[in-house]
Amino acid sequence: MTFGPESLRARGTGQASGPGDVDYRLVRKHTLDEYRRGRLSRLDVCDAHPELLRAARNVGEARSEDCPICEDPTLTLVSFAFGARLPAHGRCITTRKELTELKRAPQESTCYVVEVCTACAWNQLVRSFKLGKSS
Image (cartoon, rainbow, N blue to C red):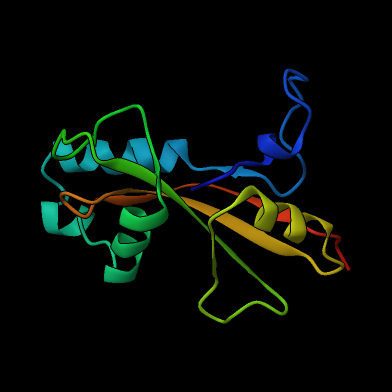
């Protein structure tokens, strides 16, 4: 399951992203363009770590679009948080409650949302945003 910063705001407010929010759509587009031009091989773009694939299969949130590489409908989003008092390898966010707890924490952390295809191992960072109070 994945949650973006918009899930922490009132629905329908139309608020813009906050400081520290980064959208990686242009990087995704560039990577796909390079793959389609033949400058990147499938091995270059379909290289998800086994733990990322496991998280995608077990707690990933299904996307409404198909994988841009294999066109399989198994594209999912997975969220990880990194920061003080979290494991060095990050913490996979699986519930809204976990996200809310990190938002209210006294220390700042960063949440990274990754799209993953469990069929071909495509993976791409989608966005990142800050949680918690900054020091």
